[in-house]
Image 1: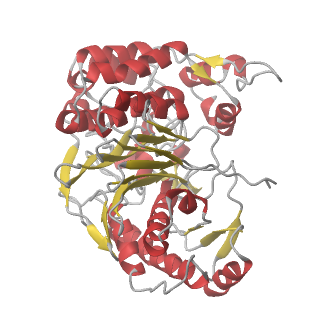
Image 2 (image 1 turned 90 degrees about the vertical axis):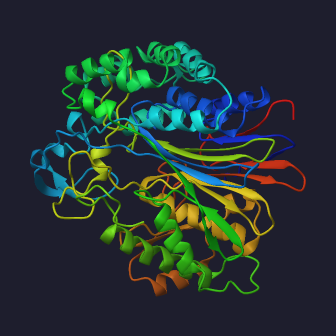
Length: 521
């Protein structure tokens, strides 16, 4: 148990704001805002920077979802750039074994854990397609200019501070299985760790700076159909990843205008389709039947209502959501938020899925690859079962909310199945109790994410814990620690159109997460 109280004050500014799970990436985005870029420009630059300072969370080998809101038209859009399985995928190559998988979702186990680790776990990387589509449709800066900071950071190398060393150590056993990854993150066979009272070591990810530089000069299409794609295909072959030139060339991100949905007197915008957006809508719709009354803070009854709403929404999600044989939707994980000085907002979640994704780094290009096959249900005949050329059901849920006050809030989280619980509660805290971002971020949360169990933050009032223990048959508590993080990793950015001021509240228990205002404001 961690015996301390951690608080992180919100940051207010007269200009734009970037909130990220790493301060360096937030600073990159804030610098773009200071140069006159809009929220999309800043999000793209910060997102690529995250790939160099937090490469185990997201990057060129991953995917994501983005929700954005335009101040001039008051319209909202979602960009879906989830991964897709290879056209040559054979579900028979993923035979069920004993037990459950070793990672986030407790699917039935697959032989050799191959849907979670290594070359069989890799799906078509889609990050470049998604953020480049956002820039093409809504950005103002040039692609090359926005990738420049990431190139510089990657060229200098990754500083392995204690938190980075902790992340590497948590996955060291699996990282050691793959030579190309082991050579980077486990030099001489050990986790990189600085000496006491000395500067931390630097990790150089061989090939990554050169890859981003080539991508910057040749443009995003090169990743899927150009010279860079040929390098990727050679890299795939060298480590037995079965993605083809056609898999890359045919991938397209999807842009959708979203009309949003109402939660009490607020308007919520979230992505549709194979993500957690529909589940967020379902959970908030169920919660609307509960009246918070005149309470100033959520009490036991409110937490119970949130828990029941999440439990029912998740049960429905797992039963019916996924691809169908015709490829249509059968119904309907670092995060960053950006709001510029004009009130344009971006909520962006990007991921490799597991920490370090497939644990497999491409030897030449330095790209750490996703383990997108883990998102599929390995059991046949299910809505989300393994199939070729299909997109699996994901948990990302970047949201933008027009609050009853008229303020705009960008909110989202990383954390697998825990994302929906976190985003839903933060929205409820702000709408039902008028909480500001700092208060909402420091208010204890529960988690209900399809396991049939309610997990409660032990810092909740004892009366609330007693009520939840009484009302839920499967109940447990956990401390909201620095590591492990049991209640997801959220953040919030808001814009007040009356004052043109922004507020950013970063993930509290991460030493790296920060809200950074636009420089000069």
